[in-house]
Image (cartoon, rainbow, N blue to C red):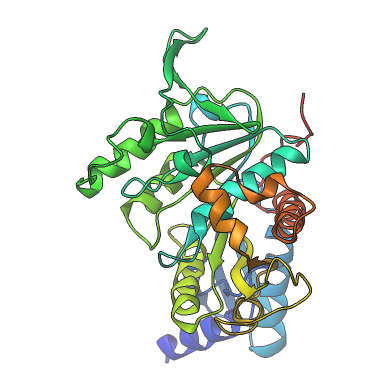
Length: 362
């Protein structure tokens, strides 16, 4: 009888959604130590952040749903706050850290990362970009800095740091700067994770408004290492309109929203949304399907941050080391500029945002 009552209570509490997420507080494992003692119901609500801005709302909704739909009128809820994650010293002056992720390869995640970084820089923000795709680093080529080699400097704290390469106003670090570009990176998971930690923790980033981290595709040890290494402001998930890409993007969103990760998903980017010929910029040909990203965003309850069209010069720009975002008047340049504006807005509203004011430039 008691177990049935507890099950019914959990079912009622599953009606309470975490604001800004499609997940409920039960599936997120926030409801713990559920007890019934006489006519009193008590449980803990576990929040990942010390200062969760939605704590009061969730507590109130939980109390209301129990009192309205169960025989219990005496409800005791104890909020428990996990220790807020600290950032490494290298990121002390970084206002927002955003992961750019995708469920599968081939959807243009690195292209989106590179152009988003450039678009943010053009809008006056101080930007850094970590190429965390350890097994297939492409950022050096996309920025035309393949021959560059970062130098080591000693900071005031006596520690040695890696000075990022700078291009188009973006500070860059990639494993591609340290390995032979013609050799395959055959590393076990722990080796790749340690390489990522080194790029982040030993990067001489200084003051930044945004640090973007271009993750490898899928869900792996590297993603968990990132979450454990740095308190992320949020994640941007990239997909294409195709069903196979959408299925993997859905898994990516679920990973960030899972109880063990709980990183806010700032939104979804639909890349290759349609093909637009350069000579006919008003024409749209949906060669990979139509509005798949928009429908997934609606399904998961996350914002659709942008739809990026396919045009010839987006590939040429990547191959030549000149991201298309450098031409804000082009079709894709305008798309990335709009994407940057929406990412800024989403980051500022994120529950995971640090209490650091994001300003343009110095």
